[in-house]
Amino acid sequence: MRLKNKVAVITGAASGFGKGIAKKFSNEGAKIIMVDINAKLLKKESKNLHQDYFIADISKANNFLLLRNYIYKKYKKVDIVVNNAGVTHKPKPMENVTEKEFNYVFNVNAKSVYYCGKFFVPKMKKTKKGVILNVASTAGLSPRPKLNWYNASKGWMITATKAMAIELAPYKVRVNAIAPVAGETPLLKSFMGGNTPAKKHAFLSTIPIGRFSSPQDMGNAACFLCSDEASMITGVTLEVDGGRCI
Image (tube, rainbow, N blue to C red; front, top):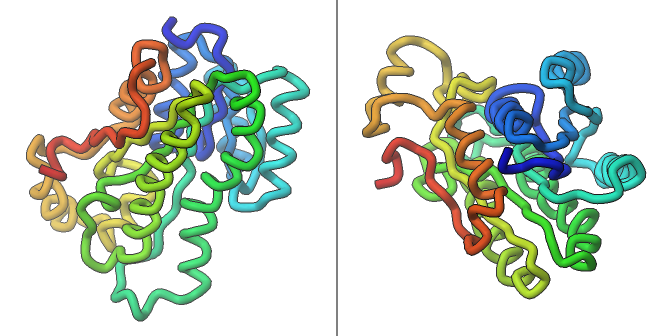
């Protein structure tokens, strides 16, 4: 019960890593607001965990504002924000990525973190407590060819984590990131350019431990960094990647 009575917001919580983080947080006693754009799946998964949900497109300011207002009205506080929602473009040469694809990737992966700072940080600063966790990627540390602007968006997130951490440290607000390698999530097919056994084998060969990151791996790492056990840790990007970045 390391997160007992903590109010936690998790974006992209209906599937993949977000779902794994939500399950772990729930088991550790947190009160969760699961956020996702996929209404049907979100309702199903939140019901399974007996947790609250909020349907939102977190790349849009008005959606984030409505989310904040809902949470503060109902729960009066936010202890933890996990910026997990993420998207990618299909593998292709950088010059072939359309402006629409570029904007989509950065609006979801980067702008949502900006909105977190804009809408949740002020009250955290005022109360002098809170934790923000950004779900980055090994792509931001060791970029893969043809995932150029996705790589860049995750690199941005890692730098944003450090920038947020140093600015918010005097207010006792911690900001960290986790960097998973690809996992069995809805994005895997896009990362690999297909989901064939050959492509999986080729990808797994780059991971020394020999398997993908799992939602459980992400939940365990996220729980530690968001708990009081990590009270002296801020500004770090924890690689949960089976040695991919060595």
